[in-house]
Length: 80
Ligand SMILES: [Zn+2]
Image (tube, rainbow, N blue to C red; front, top):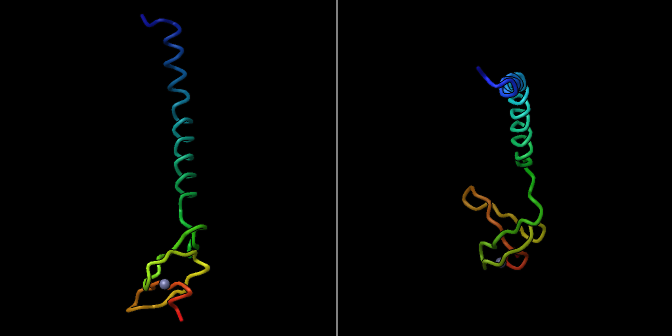
């Protein structure tokens, strides 16, 4: 014979399991959605290394130059 309290716990677990699974799936979807990078956005504080001198600078201080189909970054010093 199953202990009455243990029986209640097992009944509760089976009653709550579908809802619990639903909440877990929602949480995973929520995290996955918010982890997506912003399309075309540049993360704040990201720095680029100059392709010419290797100096690192903020996105605002760097000049993108298309080089053989790829974009490379030059600092304001080397872009002139
Ligand atoms: Zn440079």
